[in-house]
Length: 152
Image (cartoon, rainbow, N blue to C red; front, side, top):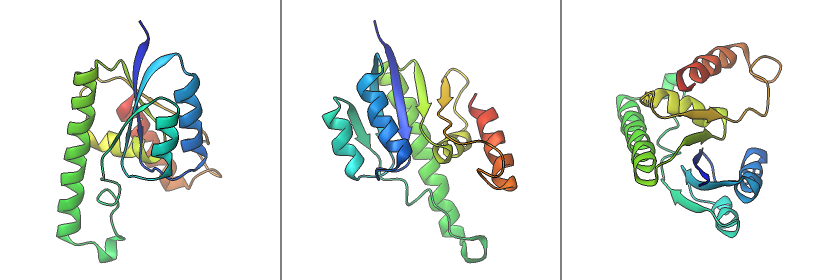
């Protein structure tokens, strides 16, 4: 019986991490299901690779404006979107008997860390760059390390 993997991606644009997701879905000896937080060209490629893909249009809601332009409505929308993302992950894990949730980018790792998933949900993050400067800023390195610790 193959391992069941739920892959989470924040974008459906065709970047390096997303092309890697297609290859992984095609060649990983597992039952791979994908949840993307927006629609785009990646959906078609994943379908062509034989993946089940669910699109949850949450990416825009999970992007906050800069602090000096942020309103309470922006924060409320963000919290609602995080709640929906958490529910989406937990429902998919329960419905499909998922063994592992694969977080395809650091952005989605941060989002899932903010969702406060129960420890029974096993998460793995794909790292393609370092978690320290010069790959990312010093501030982002700290935030990403906290997020990695939260989901591990």
